[in-house]
Length: 447
Image 1 (cartoon, rainbow, N blue to C red):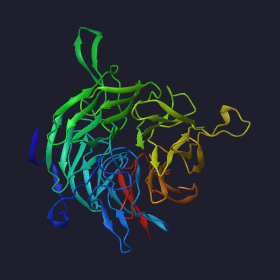
Image 2: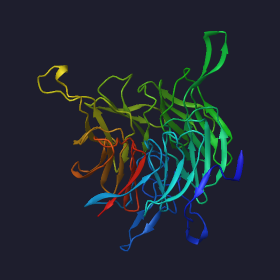
Image 3: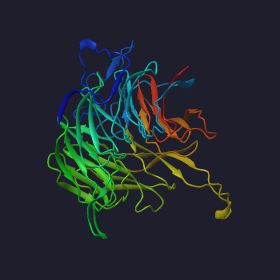
Image 4: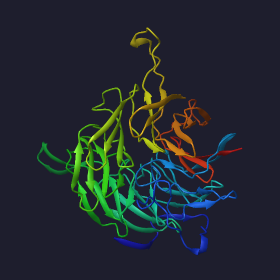
């Protein structure tokens, strides 16, 4: 499936430059230690400290840790520095950043992949795709990987905007973001169908979803795990560590062997295909509820065996996003669907959403603090240099790792209530980048 030099529908706006005339090694590499970003993703500050200049995939690394320990972020007098209009109805996926360029996708029709200059907000190139891209792309070794609702999976050269290869998978790709590790691309798919129609509607056979492993260089399928019910979905973004790929599905959470796709362990604790894991120090963390029951819970499982180490119950009801793990603490935002007056009946509920951010000890499951965040959230948090960033309904909030409010920026839009934010932040090069439901990418910087 190698297709070097294929144009794949692109327009070039600016010539990318690279140090020494070649692309640096970047991306979601499992070889990168948690507190040591991949080679080529840092720059040197005048004070001698290294600063992360990249956020190359959903959750920052292959473990979905969601933390960039050496990132430099805006700390005061924050503002929307620029907005990039992708010409798409929505931008609910999360951006990624590599060497001064932001890569983002249109999650409505028309979709496509956009490369945007991180400094100016100007478009570098656009790559047209068959179907929109609902997930966050991943960038590794100068190649961007993304799947579409049109059943195509692409590898695109980030320097030229040309297609490296395209694979016709036969599955739709939803919000499961790919992760690249061990020279493989791991990604979940949407169940589809029918595969066979034979006379009666009752005899229709529908295609099950799958967790796929693709060859990162050529695009051919290495293995698939599809032991799921018909028309089920995998919206979970996988996380990879120590030879295992972890993800959730509608029947529970799973760990598979990265080389063979064989089941290492499975547990029927969280029945939610949207919940993505985060891995750190031999534990895998999930946040969600069992069959939609409340309250939501945060789970810590032994990554090798699936044994439950601890659980922590949260008061809020809506939890469909990834936790973040940094410096011995798990951060997880949740939302309540309604706020009711004290002593009032259900009819007195205002219907207003409320957001809350929890900080829980990663080893023991003990609550460290919890704090209210303005409006609800469907955004997985990002942690950088002592600050937690969360997209919240019509803006973005920053909270210190001690639980204190740092700042909030509201987003203006054509609607009275502003654009909704489901995108997760990416922190790199002194800015925070985030998409929104109005189809625009925003860069938050200092005045």
